[in-house]
Image (cartoon, rainbow, N blue to C red; front, side):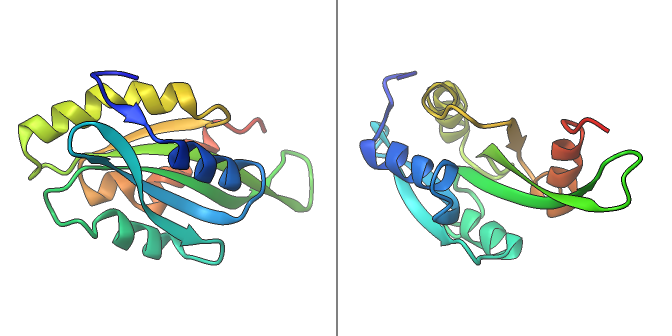
Length: 148
């Protein structure tokens, strides 16, 4: 718990369904009444990255959110002729520029609570504009974690 905000049991459960069971592609979280982090949207396993971005912004242009995404991409190992599928979990803090300062502060200060609860996340991403959350930008950050 950080800044008095608790992570709900449902949040932890959905995270494990993504991490261990691969049941969903992503989950979007929101802070409810400045007291608890709750599940806002769960993306089906077949959902696209565009679906994710739409759900992330579904609350409106001034609403902050958290998201966990199980990102899959093909990686070419150095010296190998074939590619392998890589999957990495990232946790995103989405705080649009238009969001209220109070909301930005609340979400930013509570981000540590999610980091602590969600073991197995490979990358933490903070985005304020769509170009920081776009597929290309995220994939580039995830690929930096790969060994050649």
